[in-house]
Image 1 (cartoon, rainbow, N blue to C red):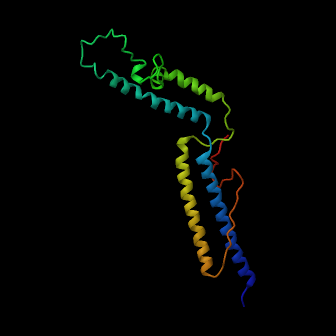
Image 2 (cartoon, rainbow, N blue to C red):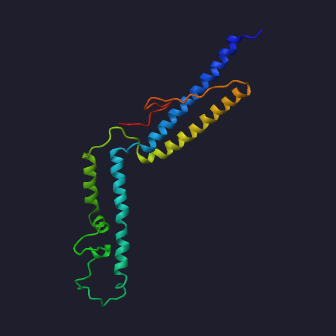
Image 3 (cartoon, one colour):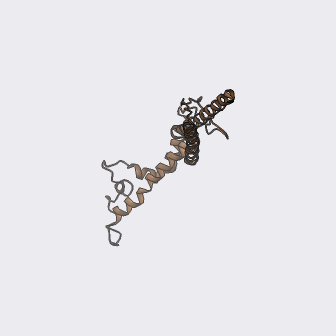
Length: 189
């Protein structure tokens, strides 16, 4: 005799396990999406802005070398020439008397970065932020691997059920914001 109660429980268990896998997948997808879009912590944001300014300032020596290239091998050049303006001209300034950005960053970079950092520290900033940039890509890659593994498990379970003639309807989970599974949450305030 067939124990239909046991059969019903087994089918229900398969459905529950499939739903649990889907909920885990959705939670990990949400966490990955958060990591891809969440603001950086304020200090990390300021540090990245300063690094960007340093990269822009690095252009100045090359521009100065281009500007001075024609007179390096001319020891008799008139160094009293009032038109030799290494502060402004080597940056390609269009308007006389102005200091191009790369030149200003080269000459006054430390002060500019300090003042920009000060402004970032007092400006309105989102309350909820993600981890620093350096931590994000490894966390995203880990989540992608976990999602792929869980999706394979879910697909395998569904295939096995279908092969036995059991159809498991799929209901996508909608986890609570901030939900995570295992470990420490990657969100910080």
